[in-house]
Length: 268
Ligand code: DGL
Image (tube, rainbow, N blue to C red; front, side, top):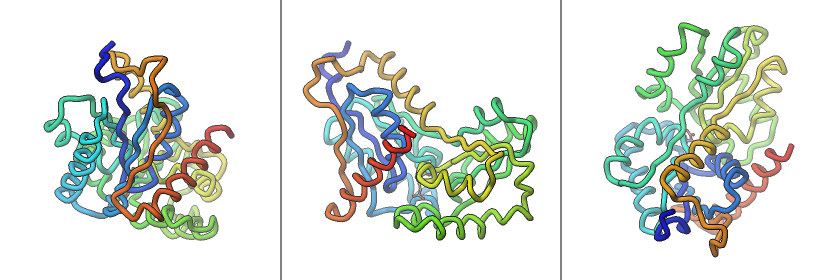
């Protein structure tokens, strides 16, 4: 055990509230840990910006969390992982864990039908996604669908009908992609976990909805174990603290509401 570091918090960031879906899963998987969650609301959305910009804002988010004293960093954002994780890892020696669209588990479990991947435009443009696509597209038919503006809509706590209208506009009503042939929808953006039910209503109950939160939380736990970084049983602090680069009066209550939602979704 690494006594100097193990009781420090785990830093987590996303462009906004999306990464709270992963945060809740990590709290469930590692209840003894303390988490500092940064909502980079001054720079939301990430997914429609370019790679250079996302590298810059991700590095600034990482720097802010490192300055607070953390033992590991979780990039709870597919977009920032694709565009910036290698860059962040070059600057810091501690574990930096990211997320990628859960295409591998989707193909392994449900490779037979078509697999829709919903993600931000930048995630789908980056090499990380295109490497995954090439690796798995021979064993399944993968249909990537960029969703510009979707994360902002979810951040704005839009009503379910508005979310469904957006989805019908972006993926159609079943006439462009025959929904009966879709076995799986991969949520390639942490924001989309909050509208899983609406996605299922549009695509139909035959499609399994998969996200990467459970696998990533397990990966974070294994990384802490391997590095001797698990919090001690008597660690003085555990739980969650929210920080933001935006207006704290609006963003912190928003984070708390989404954290409650995420815990509620886990207990369903
Ligand atoms: N939640 C993020 C992701 O997983 C980014 C959404 C955005 O800011 O565009 O990709």
